[in-house]
Image (cartoon, rainbow, N blue to C red; front, side, top):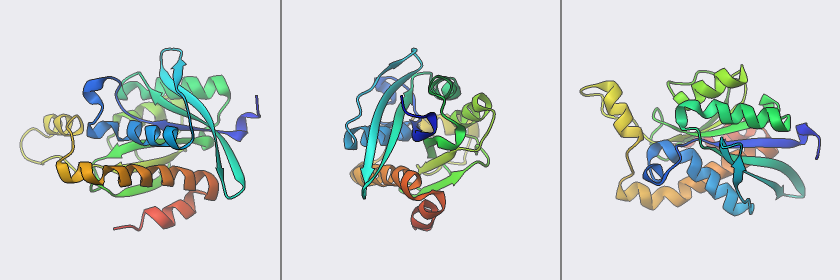
Length: 202
């Protein structure tokens, strides 16, 4: 096996199972599937904790080896899968890239960052705890926010486990492609360059 530091771990967050497939909370899974299609990654089971595949990206004469994961632990325990893969393959946090939904961004917006607050996202909270650090890269995929009326907690759950409207579904292929592009840009050109490209978009 190649040196651990040669590998990246890209993690798309979501919930396993058909009923969650097209929900807002599964944006990470959807971008992971886009990357899997682009780079011919085949998933297999990692210790019952994740669907995991391995591939090589080649852009402009440069190559990056990576693992691509979709945790099977459900969102709130995503860290169990991430820490298991990192431990097994000796992948440091600075080579971990997590793709997830973000209610604080309008649908179609993407922001990339390293570290910082989990922003109320239970998958990120779990990864922070399991890795013992928040210093890993993230691609935040905007879904828009739930209504502020009524029970905020219940509204949030219904929102993240809800689906997209017709206009959003029409925009989805381009949005997912942009999310995959953002992950590739971080890996090949660095976080700052990715922020310059994606964070400033309206």
